[in-house]
Length: 438
Image 1: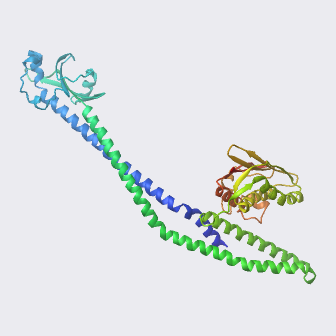
Image 2: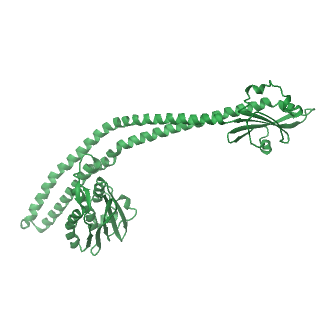
Image 3: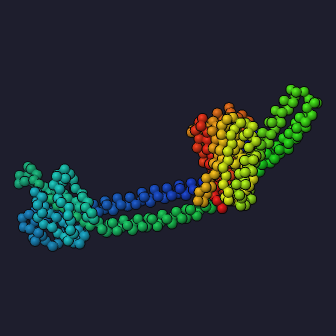
């Protein structure tokens, strides 16, 4: 049985989602790689363009440095028209400003309007290094100009020169670069997605074949186990019908064998159900039809009322008429039967079980509330897992396998519904099955 258990859980956890997981993982990884590469390239190009702009500005102010002395003594009108810095000076996109040692503007060349104030404190902090500034769409660099005195014993600050340039063109380049990278990245991502679908299909084919054989193998084992178990069950029942031919102690042992056999048969049936309907959801087509919810619940209630009465548990039911749902009658019957059986198993004599219905606009909630032992908050996330049972539940009921709620949740999801649970230890539990209304 352990082999069947392992195979069933393995198939359930992997096969239905492996194709989607592989595809999603491949696309996510490739998106991260492409995004990282494009982002790195974008910022690298921005850095290069900024460096290039700063180098041009620095070259301009350095070439224009000798003209500061001329402007101070004779004015900008005295500058020669064929100065070297004019060869790469743009009248529209750049400007040159000459300042004296006190920061007073002496002259300006170029039509670029710059509102950057000359910050003497920041220039002095830079000492001999150029000061780069950015203001909106204007980039500027300022340098200090020194000269030696007549005796070459000291260095005197003569003034400052600032070169500015509009960054409109470079911002336009950045916009085109972002657009190009965006289009290129989108195209690459589309191609990656298309190729990933093909690659995922090719990767899943051999795995799918293996899973199919494993599922078939598991199903065959379960079917083969039914035959000897049925024989054992029939033999023990025959012996129990002729108690006069056996000793009382032997009858007790036969009852134990018969009970264990029935448990094994139920376990096999539950595992086959989950294997067919959970591990291979497309292999079993549900016979969905319009069902009267009131009639369905009434049948389940009539099945469990005697058991609640025998255990001294007060059972109440409040149903609603004219509510129709669409689904498989046998599967839905099993869903509600499993939840009621769970309440029956973990509710003490004298406690209560209440079944009632809450109607919403497009959905219906079937609520089963008990005043039993309850479920610890740490255990709630695990109650729908395969073969999971809390320690308290194991002590309360030793002959259960932990598949009832798993089957209930599987059936609910097959019918586009779900199960919600709230519980408190010592106060009981509330199971709410929400299903769509026709």
